[in-house]
Amino acid sequence: MGKKFALNIFYNLAIILSVCGIVWCYNNSKYLPAGFLVGTAACLFYFKYQLTKDIRKSFKEKDPK
Image (cartoon, rainbow, N blue to C red; front, side, top):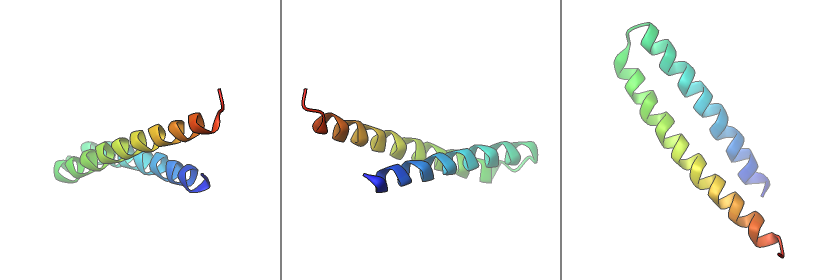
């Protein structure tokens, strides 16, 4: 479970850096790297969503209700 939380933290930091990079690229009129960062951020959001679903599922399996 600790690996999943560490991976979640990594995804959060990577998404934040991607968004900062997108803003920087847009302000400096560098649209090609901004497009790459948009794709990267979208991919990270997807992986984070899948990880969140997996974590929730594992918590529900542990909870004997």
